[in-house]
Image 1 (cartoon, helix red, strand yellow):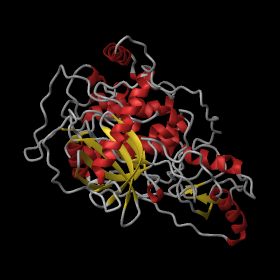
Image 2 (cartoon, rainbow, N blue to C red):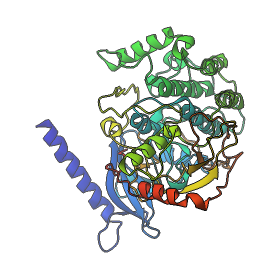
Image 3 (cartoon, rainbow, N blue to C red):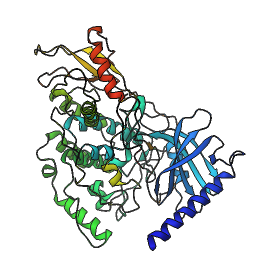
Image 4 (cartoon, rainbow, N blue to C red):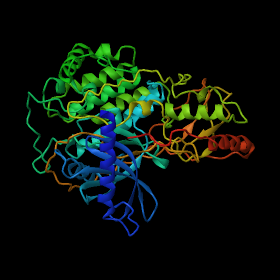
Length: 501
């Protein structure tokens, strides 16, 4: 009975929304916002409001439209829109298309992006290879560094708040959800916020830093420690403090805190390269107002990447997994070698619908509107695809002559997309009075080339694409295989239209 009542209430709210927005529409009573975007179907919801798929009326481009009732107790959309505008121009920061008030709603129109790293983690059976984690780490540290360069802390670093792009930007990691962001430094005086204690936990308990659990005011070091927990979560498949049972949320947070404090860095990182322990030791060595050496942290992981003999080709585990699925559906004329496995070179685990969900929310200040069940059963983004050819890298292994090249940035042509709005799924925000007046810092990033080599091959690593951009040379003698593989990818049909936000 209660569920039926809630469903009726949702229907009434949806009707109210449509009627409210229709007042600002054309003569056809078509719901529009900003007289520029057509309101489509709902793709997500949360305590903050609802997220809709939208379309630019002039260009037909799809966008994400986030709506928040103007009468909400803790409005956050205006604050978040200011943060996005302040960060505009940075690589991996989604664009704000429009912000304003329509009827009874605050409206934020943003870029439509691909799946979150949590979605992709689930798609890959809740474990990522070392290569994929290191490629993600490089971009994620850069995103956090950029946010810090604008005098803000994110304060809710977690896999759900990093999304992959679409199309040509499919390999680019985007940072989203600035509802809990906080200014840590005055831009005019360069004065750091004061050290404080007895602070409530802000963010997501699973990834919160040790100091955050201890009630210490967050600073730059805490964003980076949280990122370290995210990386270990990807590598290990879970964190030691997941799945703890407690009667209340407060008791649960206390249990998580106790487990986190008693879990040493060495224990957390046991069985994985020592660079991860070094990362945590560095983060915890920082004083409250210290500026982290982001370059050192990136160098730590890049050196490991080189020693492992990996190539920075943007071949993520999900790229390979989707490619393997396409080969099963439509086998190419030519057999795929060992390198068609995940980026670690090992065959992928079968996607298991019964795998651990890691479903506890662990929030002190709200919840994510993402549907974990939908995420577990959904595939990753499918993008426009191209295939090209290039000579295999020169090695002592004479078997690696020439191989099919796949662009990881433009993968799977003519397929459905798992898409997300570049908008916050967060809860009640901490609203500040900061203005969005600053010059955006632009950072180079672009998609690399996916190079498939045999399992026995080792070649000189390719570092991020700002340093390397390889143009593909086609070989007509292999065009038959090229076209056959392309047809196989083009024939893919994805069951999931979109990943719900």
